[in-house]
Image (cartoon, rainbow, N blue to C red; front, side):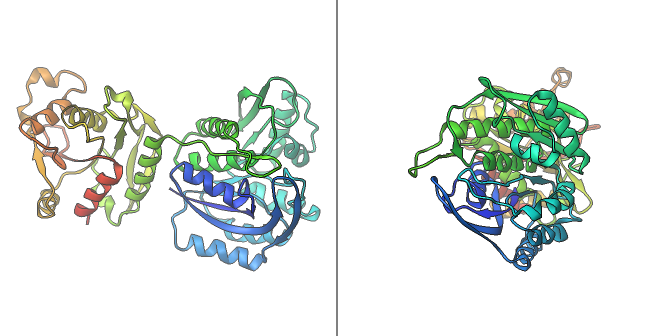
Length: 435
């Protein structure tokens, strides 16, 4: 996944561009950046800020968008009118989800947006946002509503949504008292609430961590409420890990993301970018899976709840990554792992005899099974065909094959399964045969 952050530079690396990049890295995504301003600050105080020329902001955005496929965009610090207008002119017509993080003040005390830029911020950037992520203080400023209760949060969210934001999340950590912090999400017309224990210390970088991790989860295709919840939990853990690096505020230290999800998500993004891969997508579409070590059930295998689908001459991801999300390809990995524990990943492609010949010429090890020979009793058992077929294909093998295929059966599509130790290994083999 490729994610773009448009924000200011923070030399302490707690927030801003540097903080976003650390978060993107924790999720196994590739981060790209457009710098809007340079700040001078540390964990104790804010010293100075200077905006980057608007023409250079525009040029940076153009340079990224013309060369990279971008899955999501985060907009953070925008200091002046010229910067806001430059961003709007470049992003006004794109269809990439934009996560807008309103940043008006630094935790170390400095103003991060000029007062006369606020009107343009509301008019030009809020309508671009797939979701806007203000804390309570920021939500009060944007909505003009004093927030003293959950009802006020809901009213503020609705007012902000009327300004053009598709969805709104108001983070509740700054004002409402009590042992719990409540975050309020307005998704379309539906409200969701999330809560966690209040942490008893102030930190630098928590807000940027939340919006950047939300951006990563949206890029992965998670449903919005699930993306918010995942970002919230990641941020809380990162705040708990905050380190005393300078002599002032502690700096958020990012928690590790799920390594299975990170590895699979990154590989799926690379798979979707392979030239002509659409030619290899079967009618039943493609799934790509990755298991934990020594998987025992489908719940130990992560896959897409949906599929990687062909859309014209491109492929796109439809659905979320989830343990237990795949049935057929995951069953194949489970059966392989029982005999060859090193095999933990697989994807399915359309069968073609030319593809098999190419795989053989590239030195890949090939096995197969005949679905026509499957016992009728086994066919009657829901979900047992894949396990039966893989077991037949590897019965006499001393080492795992790279590819197992079958040529179909009545009403059953022929299929190729590529196996590997991890998603990168599967991708490497896929690239040998996908032309």
